[in-house]
Image 1 (cartoon, rainbow, N blue to C red):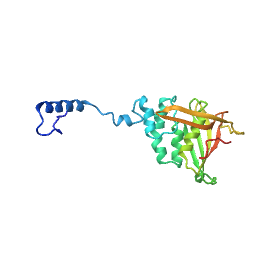
Image 2: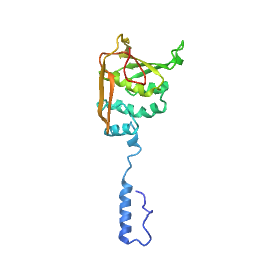
Image 3: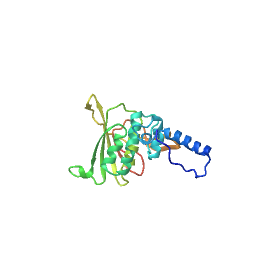
Image 4: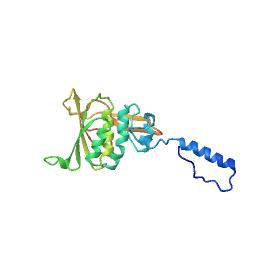
Length: 212
């Protein structure tokens, strides 16, 4: 324990005031500050993750997701926001859901693709839930720039092998997808497509409808 020498008491303080000053200073000196571990997505208690996500401006959050996904989402949030509109941001957006990304921007394709388009491949190595494609669309939409269009292909990986990626032939019907109570004082409601099992999407920044 460090010696308590500094004091804000005036010179004419009474012995009792000086004793209380030393006593309270000693007690405060014993308190171990929770920072920086509390603000570290990998070290913070799991109960604090929703508050840390809200503090970092996470817009897509699932309160029922695994702890690993929650820590990935919070840990990559600043990188996505700083690099928004770049292939790196799209890559982080896919990674934040625990998927393996493969991003190809139009200027990286040979021959060159349509300007301001991205091909986003998400390789899925875990179980797939019905709402995951909507959540992936939301995260990609938040990570890309307003002028860009992203084509999303979902590939399932089984036993170390990549399964075929099915291309959707008809548009999905619109459904309502909502997140409520996911983040403190935050409720998200968006019109998304939830019917069918899609593998191929094209999205823009003006709505969240998945197109074939």
